[in-house]
Image (cartoon, one colour):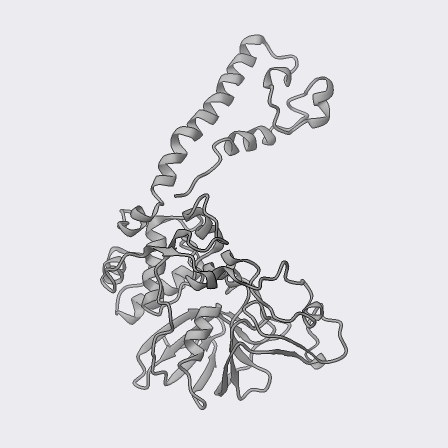
Length: 383
């Protein structure tokens, strides 16, 4: 379950008191504005009674954290997530919630990807919920309504959190100690591997690393045989018959339609940037490759890349284009994975379309050469 340090709130309150308002004495003067273990010596010119009230307030803050936070953590253990039901209010956008974790897993299973499963009703989760609602002819004014929840819950009855035993393959590596910040520094690496077993396991189950760690407090992810809780998502890509792909340049999304025009897949995406915008119009898939080698051309003139010569970066999930590349008839452009799933839809790309690695794999293993890919602005996008 999730656990928090109950002293955090108290310490942050203490740091918030400016030193000009709360003068300190002696050696403590050098640490003004920081947490002091002996608060009775921190305030000058205040009555003894007032100091005593401040001490009681400080202790009360800590005690309230001890009393309240375990209940919050208990609400986010595996059983609570599996049994979660939508209440009278939708979950908050900036806080981890059991209902949101469950909704994200169900969306992932239904091929309406929320991106990285992080337990928050953020932008990508809301995009996926609205797409799911539209595909099921439900009102989508609000991202998570009782009608949407009922329909989504009916798509799968299996637990969304399950136990998993870490395997030897999960921990054998090799792992990189650090991913270089600059592209030029990546070209000499033998592979752009995962940086840790935890990163590999998180990607395997489409879950944010922080949420994975919080669900498994005290667990070791580098130990084969360790039993942990994970999000229960498909362990291999589904079989989809894709007739057309649509990239919405404004909403930052990718949709897959079957030959009849039915929406069968939805994915949040990072689509171009002001520096390197994506093309407009209709193109076709020319290639689909797992574990691609990245090739840099100096003519791209990417910001921050100083090399005047072409270079290549070897395959791996932390390669700049991730685990899958879908090439297009627009030369140099494609749809691909990313080593940073948490930044999908929240950062810019070098002109291509970035997806999470698992979404790129699902799309890439189901497209065929010649599949149309349409880049649309908001007025052209299919609702």
